[in-house]
Image (cartoon, rainbow, N blue to C red; front, side, top):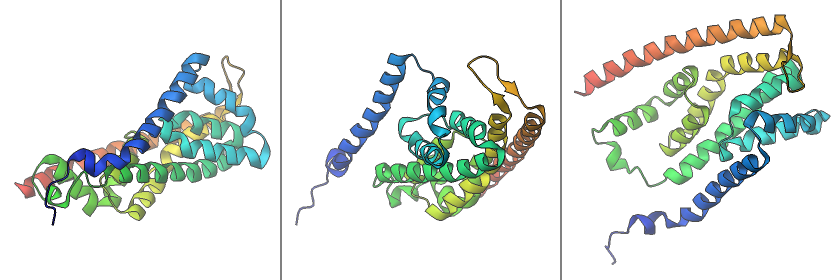
Length: 241
């Protein structure tokens, strides 16, 4: 019976091709964008024509949004584009569908690369990483909901949740609910743009006003949850001393 301890490379070497492929996607996108002199906003401008082609445009939007985490493309620009192309109502619906698909992809990518890196015995130790890992696993819904409400980087939360191997359904439900205020606000910003030719956009003041109000409310809500999160952390740290 071979009791020789496997090295890190022996344990996780099979993930190396997948990691290299992922890094290759990120590098390829950035090389292409830099070669063409395209910012993320300009990339979205290039894609707007495809998004306006009826039902096919909806599928293109959802597909682009879904794979966006793999190349670390900012969600904000596509969310604004969704509002501009599809309007405030359908824009919110399509963005919620697309963002939950993208969150699922990022979650399982994080889970794949995190498998075996954080052992169960490590999770029982008293380091701050282990304490937060236990907290995310034991209070997955509340923790992810708070992270969504306080506007932590969207994809980072999804990758982290998968990496720490929390349960999927609490994660995706908290993501769906916690992202609604921000989604409505940013889709509304995009929907308020009546025309855009590369210069200053023409804005609908009513739609813009409603979006600003929702955004302010979402900021207030995020501050409330951040304060609550801090109080909860203090209580947990005190109870573990």
